[in-house]
Length: 224
Picture 1 (cartoon, rainbow, N blue to C red):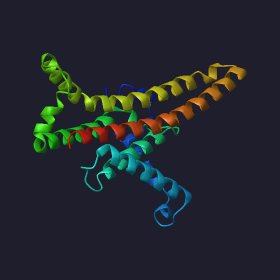
Picture 2 (tube, helix red, strand yellow):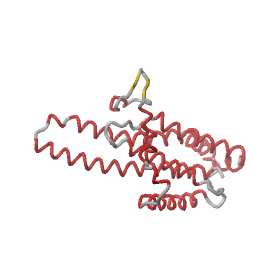
Picture 3 (tube, one colour):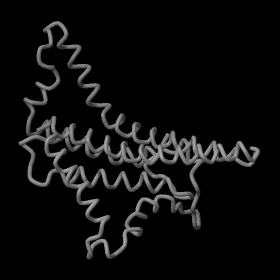
Picture 4 (cartoon, rainbow, N blue to C red):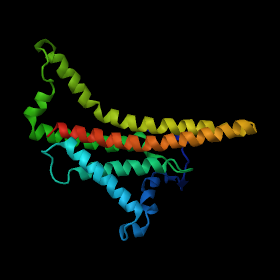
């Protein structure tokens, strides 16, 4: 399942060693050195984005959050965003469309939140299994439902990101493969469709990284 659609990925290997996952670090190469020294318009834009995310994540975490706790989730958003956009370039491996990548992000975060909550706020975690106002008859069922929902959270986080990223890439790939078979008018229509889908995928890349970071922030706020 971790490489179900790997047939659509460009394969880069030397001496039977896969170099596909090196695309995850391409963003560091693309950032110019002057980015760290001289403020530019891109720097101001990115600082505004970080400041906005910081204010929103601070509200989601609540007043009990520690100073600098939003840095983890802003870094997570940035990392996923760059990887999502890297996959939109031709012949670049999309690491965020594979469960090996998304699960390696979701599982450690979820496990650390659960471990912290059950060790430090055990009573709160037990109380969270039964929502307020639940009738006594439904309490055993609500405990089972809440327990299952907590256990499947890393899976839903990982599958949501991977499925949304692979869906658009599959559509772009399949439409691109029929290009040589079309006549000139239909080929023009196909190009316009591909451009529109590429713009849609750019929006999906931003939205999915934002959703992943926000949900992770909400999960962390529940254990405090």
